[in-house]
Image (cartoon, rainbow, N blue to C red; front, top):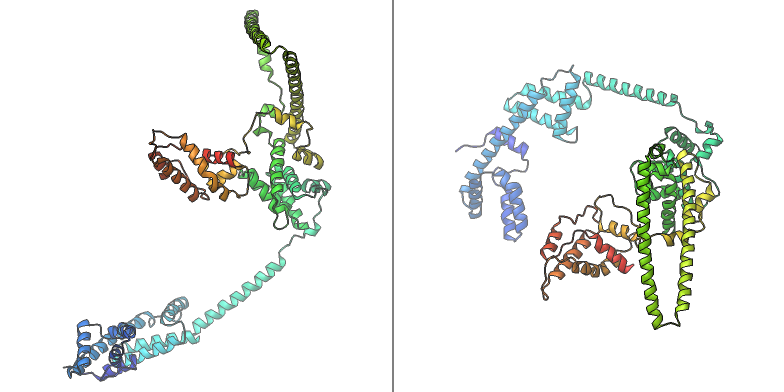
Length: 571
């Protein structure tokens, strides 16, 4: 049986100062915890210390069994385990010595960069405390001398580490001094360069009256919404003018205003094709000081900008030839003048035939009306004169109203055409009063007659969709025409009736009277609306919910009819 040597005892005492050579106190503490029913502490001690100290499972179990039974073989087995522990420790010590001998010892002191790189890596691997690396290398130097294993190389490596940490290597010291000297010179150079750099003095910049007039708006405009509209009208056609943008930037820097921020918002909105409400809100955020929002102001902004946009964007509303007031091409007139006599005679004959047909049909209508009047006169002869008078008055009033509406429409189109021509030519559209009147709808005195003559529109103004996916909330905003989402609770409170109505007209097969297909489809659609209300990437077309609704016997291609029916019945 092998005994512990002096070298083994030395290594074990250095690496495990609290280790006893005759007994193991951790084993005794383990059984004490077990006897006191402190199982958690016993298990922690077993996993953290005993397993690492005795890695052989069979030997560890047998050793603890002998200790528990107070068997004399415990001391023999414990000595064998200590010998194995000493052997493993010596192998690890030799590996560390070889690493230092091969990595640190061969370093040339003239190669400063190599010394710094290698020593820094080794010191950081040993300990965050740099001076702890000195004692670590000294300890392994003693191990190398005791083991007689690379003692000279280990001593040289320890000296290099110690001198590097204490900054006593001449080459490294000189290099560090040179680096600090260069850093000081670079800082001084940057300070001198910073002091010599030219700084723009904005106070010396002078703007002409024409430039100031092109930048600012009238001081008589006090309402925030009117300022927003005035700035948009002023900067709308100049968003691509780089020289004007530079002048705006200098003006804003000199006087500390937000004109450049307003111009930048309009420019970004035009380049990225923002919606009207997005553009208005971006400009409003720069015009207003602090938080500002008004429901009536928002509605006023949207309505006024919808009218003012006709003046700055005529090409979107009508063809270019009509918007700019161009004359009709003369080529068609020349071609029309070259028509032959035969063609004119044919056209005249066709026109006379059409006129004769129309007169014949009018005569037949008159005869039928006379017969109907004669029959009604036999029933109520006394009431006929008054009825005829009423009909005559109504027809006269209708004809007069048509004439007045035609004249008003012609006047309004003429005024819009003149304003668009001004906007297209680059001149200012109107002064503040005209802009405000046009924005408020007061530029035409007979506006109600135009609204009466126009065709019936939808309940709320709806922006044309751009084909992009939108959330249910955005669709509700589009249908209701409101930019603030206040309809969520009201929507989910009343939308089931709209779903039920649409489902009744969307059945693709005959449903049973006692079936639950309609209720199931209604619940599927309601659940989809509630889940994807704020999801901008929701897509009903091709979704699993649409397939489930179709499986129930209903074909719903879009959810927008449901939202429109809800808005029509609720709002």
